[in-house]
Image (cartoon, rainbow, N blue to C red; front, side, top):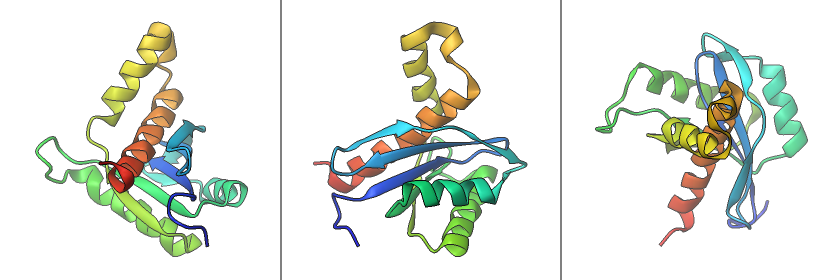
Length: 144
């Protein structure tokens, strides 16, 4: 078991049609987007998630928790919790939830800065959103 600060993290930006994925390293405090997984009304292909877990061997998984701007829950909040619980139940990995307010907006802004409208492909937005969720989680663990 790796010590905190040296773990590999896998982040998910849950959505009903697409689930963004990113990989992060605590030691560098950084993450990079992977690909977005297709979902059918919030249900992913669990074999794809299993392959990601096998490939990256994360010490911890972080799932974005969609909340309203005032911090209250919305219909997608419970579905994201259920997704996180299923990952933990199926694969036995430690799963944390991370408030993801504004990550999609921030992801779109970052991509637009880099490449204009053409950069705003849905899979890239979801991957960057997952990256931002991981970075926010690391900041909450190790920030000032």
